[in-house]
Amino acid sequence: MILIFWLSILTLFYIYIGYPLILKLLPKNHIKTHELEEFPSITVCIPAFNEESVIEETILNKLSQDYPKDKVNIIVISDESEDETDAIVTRLASEHKNIELIRQIPRNGKTSGLNLAFEKITSDLIIFSDANSIYDENVFHEIAKTFTDESVGYVTGKMVYVNEDGSMVGDGCSAYMKYENNMRSLESAIGSVVGVDGGVDAIRTELYSILNADQLPDFVQPLKVVEQNKRVVYQPSAILKEESLSDNASEFKMRVRVSLRALWALYDMRVLFNPAKFGLFSFQLFSHKLIRYLAFVPMMLALLANVALIGHSPLFNLMMFGQVIFYGLAYIGHTQPENTNKFVGLAHYFCLINLAAAIASIKFIKGEKIVIWKPRQG
Image (cartoon, rainbow, N blue to C red; front, side, top):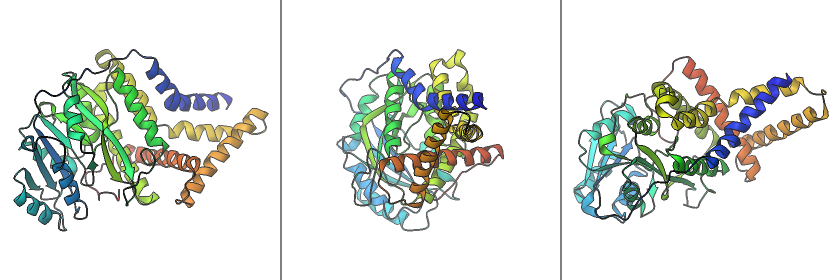
């Protein structure tokens, strides 16, 4: 039991602390960008399903970008929306010639919708936006400038969550999001980022890959870019704001869905785990994604082993006390979602995403897949 306990603790330490420390020590390979001499053409793809409450604001936000208007096209892919989404987009398209509506029938999810849009795209770059993603006015420029480094094939920006009134919810929705953004900075500095934010992503059009309907585009598309020997980099100056999910249940359902699709993505792109071919990135993919999604295993083993070791020594008693406090804080966060204590929030969110990964792993083993879902409801 002692061996199981310490191996579990060491594994968790490596996942969340050891791996970032290693990234800091690795040689840097910063991208080399320069000011734009010529503005590349851009197509913004916005998948939507029943987004009447947000779609107009999102489109107008893209139209107001500090970027040459004749270089921007917007395609909204309505996944057989049942509300006024299509009517709103049609009205805006009648006022702006660079807006187009594509209606996907029957409803078949975001990935299939993006594949439909790709058939009509001739621009240099494609930017992927969610239907509720609000960009800072310089996002297009920052993304385009990042692509002046020819080694770059995919760019992801920085997502921050806001309340309904637009006020910030920390850096991201929690300290955990701040941690993730820091990880992206570290990974981008040495080569390629492993995880991206799907609401503010961009790809060179020539590198776009047609994906299966069940594949997660926010995850598989950048992995396909790495497979083509181009870099996926983080641009923290390209900021998007999205409303945070309003309750724990919605957040949990979303995390289960994303985790399940990510596990299938790792399986589909398992060729990238070959270090002989993909070197450092294979190590990153294993450390940042695969064992991160399986972190619930050492968490459970550490807890069970610690219970068995109570009374064995003062150290194990102290460790058990620490675990009880940690999970107690997580429970408070679950029962009191209005609690603003940062330690409560961090413990709760940490447990939430790992429980979601555990549920997703069970679904993965059972062969379950997800293609469509209700936005912001999981």
